[in-house]
Length: 116
Length: 114
Image 1 (tube, rainbow over the protein chains, first blue to last red):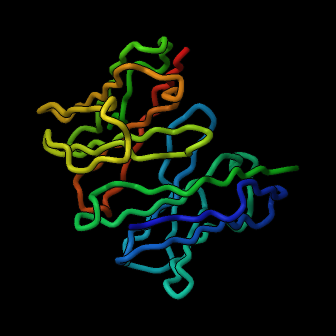
Image 2: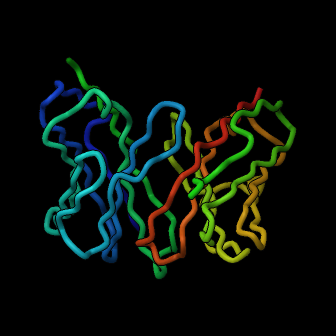
Image 3: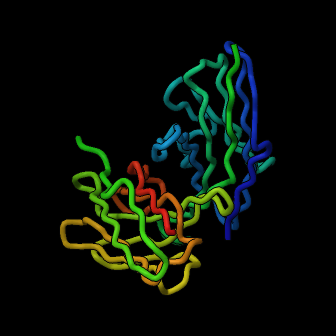
């Protein structure tokens, strides 16, 4: 079984400041990890994914995440926040073919607010 | 390349009725998954189809069912609607089942049960 915990349901940053959204996972086997973003009244857009090729993963819109096995973490960062980054962010895990195919287990989400 | 499309985008039904939602995956994608999103329960996995076969199912009652056609398009059906079925239903498509394939989500169908 797998699970995801996102610390902080709401995060507020100033425009230009560092964005750090936290995600910890629990998995019985090496997981595949994803970050998605959701804008109001829209579906989910994939930001980046970890599939064991590299621990530091770069995604779209300047976001990146680092897989730390020892800490079971996959935190999402962006050096400088932009107003357009305001949205809800979801961390998700899947175990692949042996663990349930593409079934994504999501965290509860973090609402990011960017202030001027 | 066109994205995942879902129809209808909005739907209002009354308790006891049934509803069918449709999802057209990205061309070439053979896996389709369905998720329910509610404020209280968050994003929950409903089921996944690959090559017209259900490969995985979430913890939902039998009122929730689905199917996939030979062209990979998928439908999900909810019978005997309850107020608690009000949610955003999201469909995602992927090339395969390996887990490391990207899953692309549609815009969702907003179902309101009154």
